Image 1 (tube, rainbow, N blue to C red):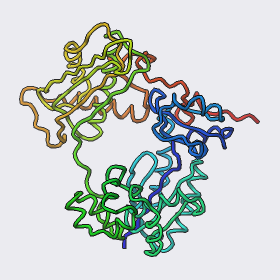
Image 2: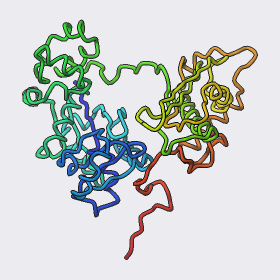
Image 3: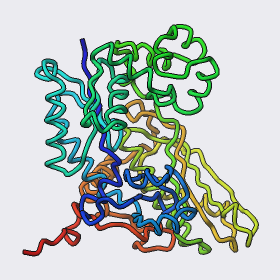
Image 4: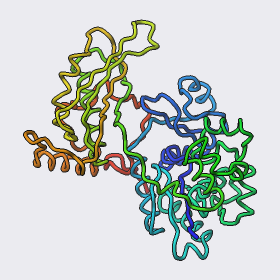
Length: 421
């Protein structure tokens, strides 16, 4: 019988911020989204105050500060580095690790894990805490869905010590009877409401529903999920992901933009980032689109937004080749006068690189392909190490507002914490 574990870092972004600030222990802490807009991570103390995920921070800032709360801008360099350290420990602990998100991963368990999974999980949890300073919850079960459910219980009830094993059928039944159906992995709010209209309110009721009938109404994914709730691995995790339909890179500006040169610079940055994502996925695009817009909620000026696109002569993933089309597209939609609030790039009509049908007279230059590989390699090791001239020199007004960003403690020599003896 297969065994799975799900390891999830508790309150990941908030825990990363508190890791190097022990003076903040016990104080409510939140991490904000891009441009310091909404709450994306909360410490337990902030949750106890009633702070909700995705809540616009300006609405609660005064009350939150009055109760001793502290807040941070997102520091993705710090989070990415600490995530890599946790994942490295997981890869040493199990032969097969599937990273699910920045703060969680599934482990397929073999060997010694099968004889005493709880003891191994507790040792792993202690090792991660000792080596990284981050607390994790670990859920164990005969399928990925049950491992996810066990992790939900491990994080919800502190008395579990952060580890829950659902290998025992009777224990599974007790937990599923207490778990709302919308809390089951892959259900969510909308599908949960539809299931509740059918009288399915808990995970136990969902597990007891005939899977074939659910498939007819909701599709094969829900059928597999029900099979896994009943203790049989059904490929919910191992099913191949669908091919991406598009790559979108956009962001609201830290300040409103009125100059065309700055707007082009912002679009160039988005385009370079989108092309990097293409290459990471071994894809090429045949269609390039851009859009610009003002704020729809600004009473001082009428709303303006427009988009432009072009079908490329041949599929591309080359940042320099894609940038060559940018000026022509921007000329079609640029209008002087408005204060622009957001811009973005969309790459679509994607195809796998290995199936690329080349152009007889205008194929991709192998030297340029190697250049892109070198650029990507440098930027993977040094996230701010290499930029193109079209991307500007940095510190532009369109860049994200990050008034409360913490130092990059683990990735910048200048930000290393000092210890005084």
